[in-house]
Image (cartoon, rainbow, N blue to C red):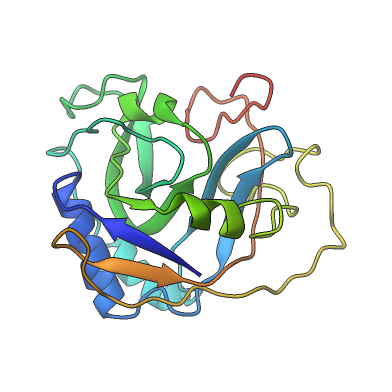
Length: 214
């Protein structure tokens, strides 16, 4: 298991959405479906969907704007947690986005930074919580969440290097959540695991995960 310590001052709208979802036990039973980790390079572990399309669709229709939130130091470093959002070319509508792509709106998807991914900061992916270093080593280390399926094709282009183990198990421990308090905000507990992975030639920093560069 691992615990997310939420700090409401880091990204208030994200912390509030996380609190609401946790109180509703929204993450209970949900798998980790995207774990981008190689022996020498790591990126993110992603979860959030309930795997119930009708329920997920409702929350996706209730996206919350992140244009009032900017990334605060230290940004997307290892062990921080942020919402995965839709991304669009920078139109200038978000004053907190200085990258070529900007995160826009968020709903239920979360990702754990498995490495120092501050290249996501200019796109305004604002972390709202942190995970204890010991939990990062055990839950997200080599013996933790499974990382052999490859990237999900709907997110980024396929990668043979990462999608190497097609005989891997299709099950895994699922997410379980509860609300508590840490620094005046909710906390979130999980169990491990299930996954996916890969690399893309897109300039989108959230998909352009090149082990040779990151």
